[in-house]
Image 1: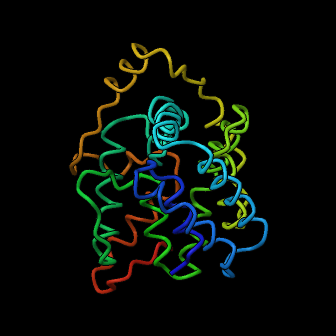
Image 2 (image 1 turned 135 degrees about the horizontal axis):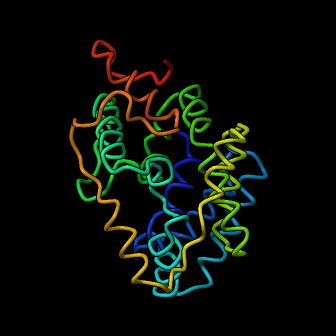
Length: 237
């Protein structure tokens, strides 16, 4: 298992009581971990230290304000690349099929494109698969990191660590397209409600082959899902 990706997955998850209570142990694990570089470990340690200084409710309120009430900071990957609901719905199905094909079980209450879940899955894959899939999501990770940096959010360190771990350069055109999206006002709840109502995700197979959005991730996932003889999906087209 890639321990560094598992740690990032935990730090980007909603800070439950169990996660918050385990932060001291997580900090010790980071100090002892040898699979990640010094830079990544230092970045993640700063986030751990910041979470430790907050009580549980403060940590939870900050998390919701950032990631649940700010669409441009959404931790759902396909939220950033699929404007039409049917595109995102089919991409979800494809991603779920890839998880199933690899024997990776997820909680039914969580959407498959949730970044912490995606990173947990990647932590179980080969170094080649990890690099390839992180490369495919590099523009999303960088866009979120830049938006968090503008807000001076401590969570930017988790995304900076991911950028370092991926050793990838994001596609400039895709990154620019993501950053063109206007920033949401997390205090304007009426506007946020309208946005979510306009983009209800529908799962199913009604999306055509040409309905794919601008991300390479979905294309690679679908290619992997068409290889039933291989229980461990390859994401290479």
